[in-house]
Length: 459
Ligand code: CO
Image 1 (tube, protein in one colour):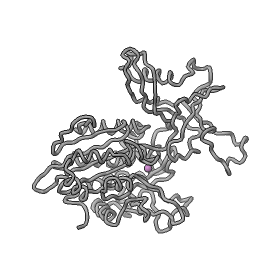
Image 2 (image 1 turned 45 degrees about the horizontal axis):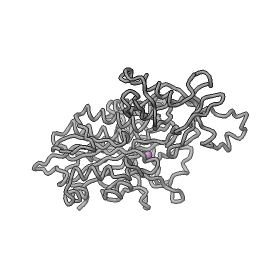
Image 3 (image 1 turned 45 degrees about the vertical axis):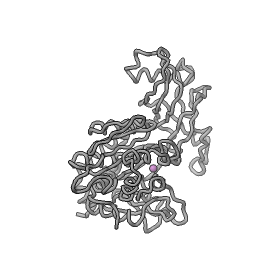
Image 4 (image 1 turned 180 degrees about the vertical axis):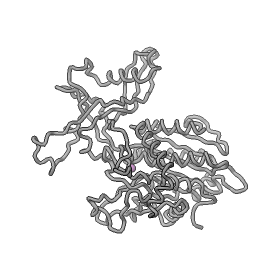
């Protein structure tokens, strides 16, 4: 039996369970708002207590806490316990895992109605979406809505998710574009406004009225206050096809938003595992932020102050905080490009990550990734400890390189950081593909990092 096959065998059942929960999580999380809500509810189930940014915090040793910002970013942490074995954050630093909650998508414009023969909605492209796969899909709509209750004259907000397919973007027939298989381009302003219904089949011509109707049908508790007026929203389209384990031998998982809800889920499971297993865990942290796909520059993005402010409130003394950060580590987790067998020349021949052969360390001399030899070596050790194979990625020298929250966080906080992720195909498509082994393995290595005893680093 090859080591690849035996690795599969040994972890078969926990990997299956992990994947099933992962796919359910992604399906229930069509937007960063839903992802944040779902992460929060899993944390609550594990005894984490919500902190409000507007309140004064008093944190207890051994306490489990989380906070959200903009309903779309979330930080969770276990406050380490000071013991004789010196596991407080001051002594041994903070183990952090970071990922992002957002994915490229189509977002509804503020005055979106386009009505002629059909009711269509104008959209903005969010992030670097691969647009071709959006055609001929059964699409739904989800996001956050702010409305006024006319009786009390109060503003309120709710998440919304139509769930069923309510829209589609049909392709143009090949007969009307004979060049479609050679030179097809997509104009995002004119080619992709989704169609919701035939004009006249619904008396409603105003999108906000449609939203009010959906709010009332989705939230039972609003039945008593049916007089509501939708003011504003952040809404996106998503594919209703459920995530699935696929391939003749179930080697793959196919889903929207694997980049990067897969990494969020890996980090969350690692944190929950530490809670379940350890009586006196060290200070461990999960940081899942929004807006990575558009550069992370926002109040709740990785370029904003959310993490810095949280660290200041955990360790108010500047001297102590600086000492703790120097002994800490951030694993920035975001998917990597596996080598596509049909396009292998897009990779450097010595750096060819394959699906199901383990997580991928991402390295870039120009600091598009934050990995250093020290942080890479630490990660490599935890992989060995867990018998998880490790691959590495560096972009072709004649191609540009993507980036992640890793370098941004390292720049903001000064924390030693590494970039890693599971290899995937079709990144930023409406349906991406990953290996069915790699997520569980990455999560186990994160757990090993959380459980690392003593200060992190090489003296
Ligand atoms: Co990503």
